Length: 348
Image 1 (tube, one colour):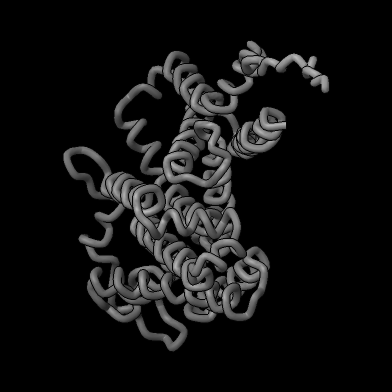
Image 2 (tube, rainbow, N blue to C red):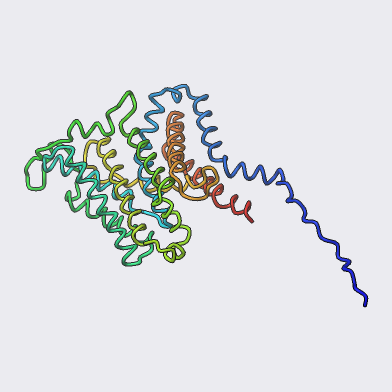
């Protein structure tokens, strides 16, 4: 009996091909492109405008973006669970109204106003959670509805007029209170030369980063955003965590409202209206930082700084305010290209 020998030659597994230069460049652009844009713009304004280099100007820039940045942190939390909070601007505006109403109309101290504003933000977050988690309304639609309800509510609270110290109220009486000095220090005060609002922005950024990146709760939020059904099957209480994200977003928006109220020193009924777009923009911009392609705290903070650099630099150069919107929109589009278009091509 004869045996047949196999004539097959074992195939050699080829070593993985080295990454081509083009792919390496693309990967670097995705990972560091937005940081490069930020540094380049900062260097351009610093070299072309001496006043831009002043420490006072830089601190004023951070102070200016602190409200949008803090609201953006709230949006980042809701994006982490796969949603988005479109009511943050209205909640900040509600905070301005509640602070003014508490101190000017009811003659209460600043601490009472702070607690009232934070409570109002938490209630707004709970309303969003109720609509989204319990009533199953899509996040964007629910928070848009909440935005209009809150905007109308704050007008009802003040009979459609801004609250200022010494104003004549609808019943003919004079408002007895005023914004206290301690409350006004929230934005106008400094500690070792640094504005208090900048310190609040920095502290909240660190806390939010620790929460999202270094705790189980943060990892669960990201897991829910990636795959809510798999998270549910793993035993995670998806609804509770999504509700937590929206409540925290409401609280952060109310803190932004406190800074805004301290900044303007009155209960302006239009306050917070322009903050929504900037807050959403900085959160979306943040997704492109370091090529992560997902909401992250440091990215949001850098996005806010970039918006501040652009606004301050263009203002110093004397460009009209409406051109700033064009530039900010272009930067947002650029960030989205980094986050989605280029990153998808890399993984294709």
